[in-house]
Length: 386
Image (cartoon, rainbow, N blue to C red; front, side, top):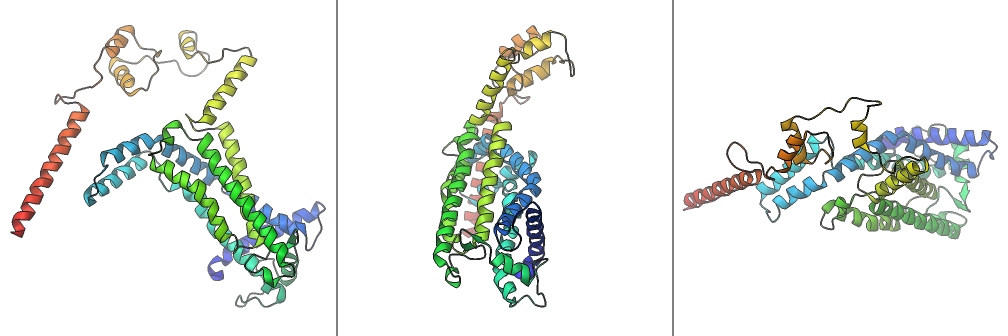
């Protein structure tokens, strides 16, 4: 495993070593001590800064997924109760086509976590190798060091502690160290903090940054997010005892970073329709009042008066106005001629095509044709068996 992860371990070792040297330059103690613990915190910060573009992509993917929920639910209702292979395949194809048309993917939101997994395991293996390196017994082929971490530096890391617990120790290996009780207590406290911070970050998203349309209890995505909110922290109970104190520090720092990043996102760029979005709109409204401006921007007046900046509002033609009103893409006070507005408002809700059918009637006929074809296919198969 070290052979596969060694390039990542090598990069991590240089980042930790560089952060440690920077901390000693600003006055922290050289050698074993808190500087090596804070170098793990610094490693977390550096990694999280580097994956900010992925976080932005994850945010866009999540927003797109939330906007697509009504369409996804429509497809799910369409194939509800149909468990045959053809129907399930068509449902999957329609869903993937929907994601493709909107330039997103159901897996795009997982990218930051997937990118971090190799880094996480590389740090685990690096800290695991600290003791053998410090004792000169590292079984790494011809290697006697990992990047700048040679035997001398490894001894410094091995002797660095968090409240008396060495950063290379874990609950599983606590009996190999002089103060096993300290290791147990510190590890349990860190695991508890990790569970609390992870639960808080998940709860923050679900209560503040989800639009009302995505909070449907029958929505599979909402159900999955709810299961993750309660289930993911429990994973720490079973996995936390295996990982070293240094890895737990990395993990906990990452959770705090997530909370800060999400708080910034929810405050400055919340999802439309969410509680955070309503709160932001209220803040903007109060800010306008303090400045002596109207509580809301009067876009209608802006269209009637002289245009200060931007392009002139273009009036819509008869066909475009009718189509826009049916799809809900223009507000009631849009710049539409009175005669066109009267025709739009008096038009039928259901538009019939050249064949004299509405979209719903056309879809029903397609469904009836497919069902008839399936019945004929079944009858043919029965005749062949006879």
